[in-house]
Image 1 (tube, one colour):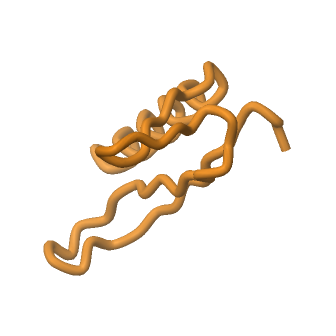
Image 2: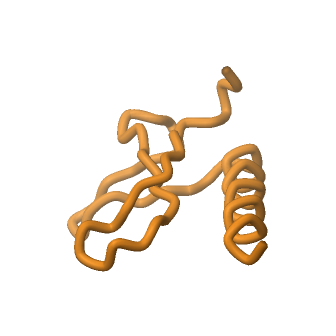
Length: 65
């Protein structure tokens, strides 16, 4: 596994709408997470941005086919 990717992607169904979507699970102990008084702040690595973009592109391409 790439040491610069601290997220896991899942496909899941929204229980309220019944629609399928991409869920991101974050490792809150990862070095690119911080916490302030409002909650967590995520600063995605370039590798995380790339994998999210690929997943979104793939998901929406398949949905429109």
